[in-house]
Amino acid sequence: MALVVAAAIFGHPWPESVVLVLLGGALIALGALQMIWGGRTLGRVLTPSPSPRGFHLERGPFRYVRHPMYGGGLLVASGVAFATSPLALVPTLVLVPFLLFKARYEERLLSRLDPGYGDYLERVRRRFIPWIF
Image (cartoon, rainbow, N blue to C red):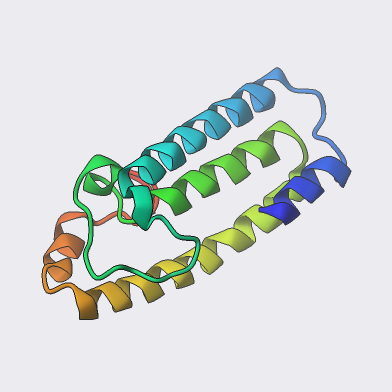
């Protein structure tokens, strides 16, 4: 995410476009809301490291996606890129495989710790953003 911000600041800006700025702002707002909702739902078990607590949640945004914080981060990074500089799309695109790897790792851990997680994976098919990925 720091590279996205750096590219946004130091990269060559898009040609002036109200549409890109509005799209970027909307993506930033949606992503921030998804991250806030996910963080509030996680509460005290929220951690930046992939260390599941041995159970999964099926409330809040976790009813729709398995990793709403990651999805929200991708939306914010995309919004920053669209609102500022095409160079910011590069680290944004690099975030996708990184977060996929991290999410799969967490899912393997949860599958070992939580016997109900396999059923959850069947019910909630999306990883990051509802209707995408």
